[in-house]
Amino acid sequence: MRPTTTRLLALTAMLAACTSQVTPATPATTTTTLPPVTTPATTSAPPYEVSGAPVELTALVHDTYLQVGESGGIVAAEIAAAGEPGLPSAQASFANFRGVGVAVVETDRDTLAAVDDGSGWRWVGGRIGGTAVLPSLPGVYAVIGSDARSGEDPTRARADSLHLVGIDGLGGARLVGIPRDSWVPGPDGRTGKINGTLAAGGPDALITTIQGMTGYPIDGYVLTGFDGFQEMVGNILGGVLITVETPMNDRASGALFSVGEMTMNGIDALAFSRNRKGLADGDFGRQRNGGLMLVAGVVTAKLRGPLSVPGLLAASEPWLYTNLSPAQLLELSLAVHLIDPLSVSNEVLPGRSDTRGAASVVILGEETAGILAGLPGAG
Image (cartoon, rainbow, N blue to C red; front, side, top):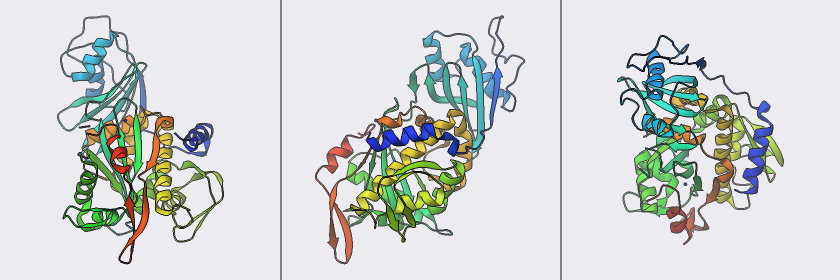
């Protein structure tokens, strides 16, 4: 598998200063201080438990930090290499996502992610000291927002919001929006608007189309429709703070906003992300605003802390469509907490508006290939 602008600086600063405006859900977090071990390590867990957490996960923490056996894999090896033996203070949260246990453990040294798919808890990565250990993560991922209304199948609607996220697994990321009207070859060889590919052939067809544009594999996708977007932004994240830079008066999308900072609920966030009729650069501006919304979501999630990840994943399950496994999605979610939003560039592929028949389309510019090739994790 295969890394700001003044707006992002202002957005991050406002979110940090105004966290009281966002009411986060309380994650299922428990705290324990693991007692010092004065006897030689054994493969049996000591007589303690993390309140509310599986005893097997507690045993994994114990065995990993005392370097007992090989069950910890690469994470245990990294901890051993760090030369910090002994049991640290630890906090844990866990939840069930698609039948798999997902957990985050925070110690006074590290942040670790674990899964249990029925064969016992195992580490999938994390941050050990100041080093990211996310072996499956580096790559390019598609974030897709379809225009499916209530009762419609989000995987068979138009892909009106489309972004590629390149992640290097070390804390670097880059965001590139693809205009929804981009005129590109589809999986069948016929050229059409990229947003119609999802409606015609589903996520696999859309990913195949994107791969044809980029020349390299896309490592996974996450997708939701109108209802899912509103639920995840408004209720699960608790709203996001956005800087509206130009007045919006688009009754088609419902975007009726004055200039300034505002905490947007799900309905407002959807209207802001869909607005294009009131923007000077139309579809390009819409994708740029969609990128701002994604970065705002990253900042809001970071403010909740890594222990919120399992609960957020579980709450999002009914609204989220993805080809990533629970372990991969847990790694991707944990990566959010390793990314500095100030370092995330928010770009949109350049091009020009044109027509094909009666359709308004976007002809992508010559710079497209270079921008796509420069995504972290590409190739």
